[in-house]
Image (cartoon, rainbow, N blue to C red):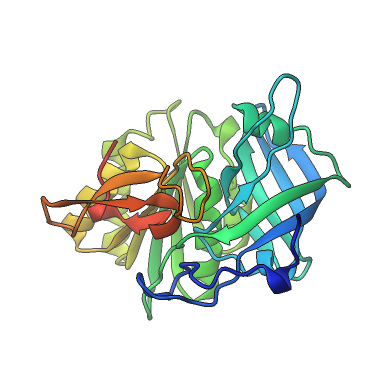
Length: 293
């Protein structure tokens, strides 16, 4: 049954600002959303825009929705699929997703047409955290990881911080979100495999050079093990906090099924390991506590 935003809240939903062991009043709802558009961005990615109720519009950067993907062809997805927010337009009451069509769930999403409906459970999870007085944020991402970084960039600019966005891709033809990020005020740097500029050593030099010009207060990335390792090195070297948004298969998205548990360091420099649920304790984590995969 689809419940209204008013009566479907989770009192223990962990949103930014909630204590790790306490309850908060951040709402979570099973939102029945109308499809406004679902268009191809390039040969691999689609951009989905949904009309959403008030609860969904409260989503914060780094949070996600658990989508009930429709069947397509021989595919009948049983579990929902987690999908990070790409953009929220509160004036138009819309939420947006950028996704790569590569599995049963996303093949189902690709069949959605304007006027159709999609069940989007959320917003769920702990998002990115900006410290008071944050002045400069680095966002580093590649491919669909840009979907998670884009709302952080927009939020940071709205909060008064400068944003440097390093976008990585195979070639200039498949770079995504450049126009969006420039439009919200980010300083965009494109690096590609085609010209060799996406080499991790080159990216790290770019970050050091930008930090020398205007020190970063936060380094952020998503999904890429290579970028996580880079931000761990740079965070320690430059003494700057770093956060990573993780991608993980999950069952319930509410921390009950323990299907998305991963190992983490108990603290940044600790060799003692702990186990955390990506959906409930994240999906955004301290990069220094995150174990590579």
